[in-house]
Length: 205
Ligand SMILES: [Zn+2]
Image (cartoon, rainbow, N blue to C red; front, side):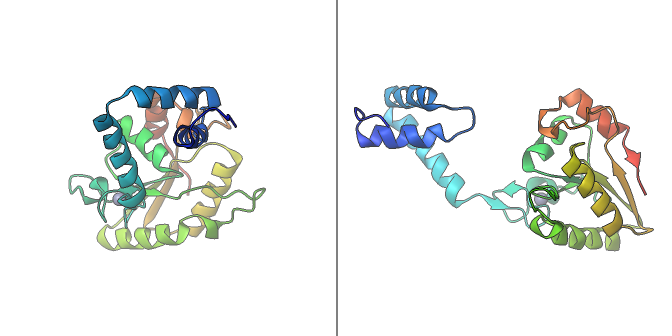
């Protein structure tokens, strides 16, 4: 810890150092940049951080981050609700949205089953997925659930678990096509590869 900085600066440096990829040196650079900004710019940044802490919610249906109880995608009538794309995280959902090749709804698991780290099915949003699936089955004759999970050990374990859990004649379950390198996190897959993996998805039940 530096003894030269006033506490206001030191506190902010320490907070920013906690961000991924930001070491102490970079955090110091950021803080000195912020000091040079106008008070109005900094107040706006503070306001946005305040909103992040106080107003950001989870969509009641898909569990994506949202400003309202139901997110834009879930509320959009033009998107079909006979396809549900199950992803591990909000960022994965954004990555798939960016491919512009999917027009159904989403569901966010908020993690993957990881037996080594003791993350069982009860620790991710599986109960909520089952209730959403039941809701969709009532409205549609047949639905497709696309398991868009990383081709890692955790992703595969989760695929197997969900395949058994959601087994029903009314549900077609598919997963992203091979072609994604094994072990890669979806977060780092480029849009074209992801778009193809989605387009050539395979039915698994
Ligand atoms: Zn939603």
